[in-house]
Length: 118
Image (tube, rainbow, N blue to C red):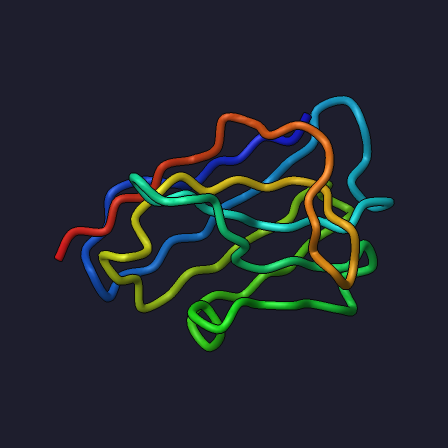
């Protein structure tokens, strides 16, 4: 199972970095995606990265503000988020995905909550 961390309360315009780590297995064979779910809304894709880290795909609303990366030596995938907006509030999840389609598969973890105050 993947474990997300790094969420919290931040003011609009601020930054956060989320981490996604694996328990009991290595991540480097998996393409990984970040997804989010805002209150009362459906879960949506944020960004995904190939298993090598050479390919990334980012949703339009996040492009230029969010950066996905990975360090396979540390068994971790990151989501650096800058210029946060109130509409970025929600629970963020990481999950294995197909690439380049970024279609998620497998089970969802508990996620990490991000709250952006305006």
